Amino acid sequence: MSTIKVVQPSGILNGMKGNQFRREVSDVVAAGADIVLIDLQEVTFIDSSGLGALVSAMKIVRSAGGKLFICSVNDQVKMLFELTKMDRVFEIFDNQNEFNQKFLATK
Image (cartoon, rainbow, N blue to C red; front, side, top):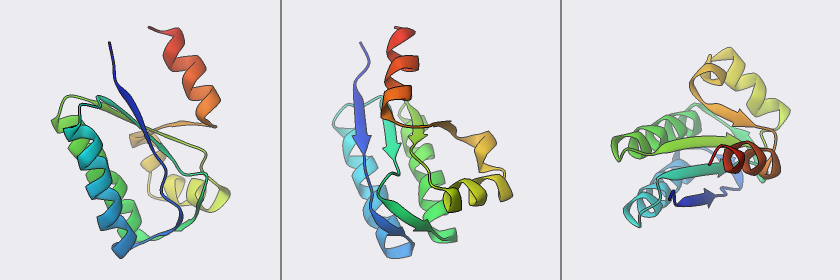
């Protein structure tokens, strides 16, 4: 059975917040989560450091044999993902409900 954990950063995801975010993802993986959902509903803006933190988070989760998903991205974040082709790297859901429907339906 998979252990799903949701991580919800808020505000601006930048260098300082990014380090905190990486630690949080590391902690949930260390605690046994193999599915990590990053809910960006409360994130208003992501800069390049924040994007780097998301990529690091994905590597942390993958190196532990887990999967990382993202949901609830706003237009700025969606545009950033498209410009950097990160929309092809991350699996992105509209919101937690869509994630739950698709993910829990496959179990």
